[in-house]
Each structure stands twice: as C-alpha cells, then as structure tokens.
Length: 223
Image (cartoon, rainbow, N blue to C red):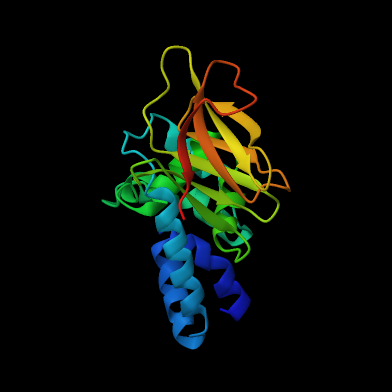
C-alpha cells in the first residue's frame, strides 16, 4: 500500500468503516508511514467531536441498505458482491449494526438522514481545511455541532427536541454585521451553505417560515 493509498483510507478508518482486511492493511501501512499517525488522530478527534451531538435513536428500518448504496464501490470490491450469499451463515453482524455502538454508525446515519451522499462528507473529515463548529446554549451545554467544508457546505447536527407548536429551527450566519438568515429546518440534521461573509453560525427557534432576525437563540458558537 502506497502512502497516498493509505492516506485515502484514513477517514474511513477513523469512522470504523473499513472491512477487517482493509483495516489490518492500513494498520500495517501506518507502521511503514508513521507520519500518518497525527493525521489519523486528528480525524478521529474531529469525527468524535461532530457526532457526539447525535441523539441516541433506533436505526430506521431500511436505513442500512440506503447507506451502503450511497457509499462508492471501488473496482477491486466488485468480485465480493457475488460472494455475499455464501457468507450469509457467518456470525458477523451486517456492517451498520456491527458499527452501531461506534462513531461510524452515527456518522452514516446522519449522512443518510440528510439525503446526501455519504462519501463527500466522509472525505471532508480528512480535509485539514474543514472545521467543526460547536454550538452551546446560555448554560454552556452543547446543543449542536457543524462540519464546515472548504466550499462552505455545512452539515449541521443539533441535539434538541423537535420544534413544536408550528415552529421551526433556523440557522444563522454570523460575521461582522447582523446575523444572516439561513435555512429553516425541523429535523435534527440539515445541510446548508454558509455565506462567504459568515465566519460562524448559530441556531434559533422561529415561527413557521423563519424570520429576518433571530427570535429565540438556542445555540451560539463556543468560545
């Protein structure tokens, strides 16, 4: 395994999303390329920080198939598809249930619920230009985290009860001026684009349809 091949697998390894064979191969490569150790630790820290905000909920029926379909199939994996039925008696659990107690399951569930392709967000974890923004309430408790990619696309995960009474959550871009109104949402996971002039974001609860200025701030960037 070359240095670049090993580096490409680091995000998936950080999410526990590699097969046993691939993981062993990467672990051997890490001994050959010790310079990748710091990158791996940074990836694991980023994944943990982001997905700790995800509430613990049952995995919806059929989610596993949708998640696995969203992941890219590498050419060298094609022969394995025909061999899957022969492995059915194996006691090993299916991938998503096997990973359920880990960050990987949280990550893949988040990505599936957003309706986006998982691969781009998994790759974002490996990009040093991506950043994680932690949102806290007035008491200092974490109410959400956001993964901001270099292209300003943002995966926002909130740890809040669903809005009630016809209200919605709304994201806000924060910069030098007034808060910039962004997407409204009612799910706990959403994807949005952070404006170029915004350096951070916040979340609030608003009437249906959203507002031009925040009504009730629920989360601000942690200092």
